[in-house]
Image (cartoon, rainbow, N blue to C red; front, side, top):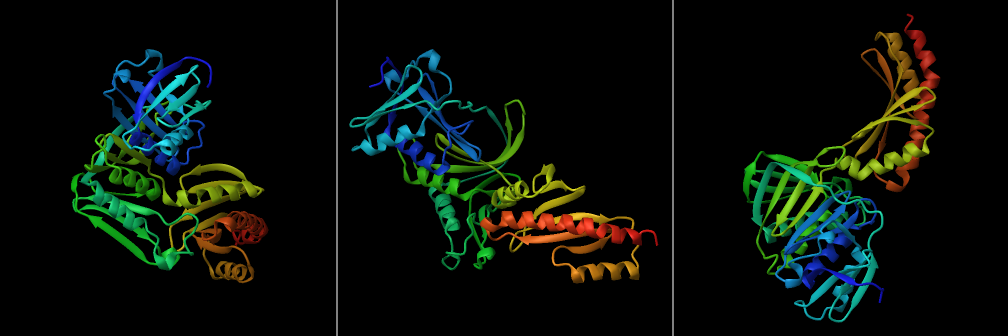
Length: 404
């Protein structure tokens, strides 16, 4: 065993360990930055935070074990526990009422000791402790946990007709809270399977609101709390909240989030525009492939510059979603038969972007459907290059018309 004197952290029941182990698999922890499983022991209990860029799970656990009553004061801080160590308890468990003991050796190594197995793993190096979140409520509903879990399970299911045609990132799921209850909606038209909506009665407070959600995290969390009832986490109602979170760090940023609270556990998920969720990384990859300079980025819009040409890239909802690239070719034109004729001529010979006249300005525009994540990066990079080339080629021609 690793030399050094073990310092007691906590006695864990195996249902607690199983809950954490299963959720770490869902969140796919990278274990760098804030992306880690955190433990903070306090007299008579502990708090777990499972933190990722997508959100966090928080669980407050009360403990009646005598060893947990007065933890070492030097350990009452956030400790980055390696999630891998939790697996040893589930592999060696023969009785769900068994307990595991978590200790710290030499201040650097977590040791989990079970009745039949044990594991020792170094703490996550370089992890950044989680910061405090201040919640500002917009709306909430309360309903039985099993009902919400069943609702999510139904909405999360891929239609039979869509199997094999669902893109790598499935269509977004929308959550609505209002005085009729809670509603989940998914539009499967991209996979030729239409739309689906699921609703349940619920006690409602606040303002009606609709937000996109990450169904995988919610589905797995609800499965854990709905089908793993224990004395510490009974089969009780849950509440679904939508609100704004003020993050207590150097940026003091504010983000919208969805939270599900059940007993001593809370799942908080950051609300992200589904267009960014599905296609944002592909656009950024295309920008890195194209010969362009990134000038600015805000939500679903990127402003680029290449050879003196400013190109605007925007993501748009649709069937399918699409990426629009545009650039200003010429300004100061007065609409006339001659001008419209020249633009029609350009469109008739152009194999790339089309040219549009609006309020005296000619724009070069190209739309790219979002369907294949593998091909979209190179295709968008090529589209940007075509747009820049066409703008530089035809700007002098159309500029002559401004003198007439």
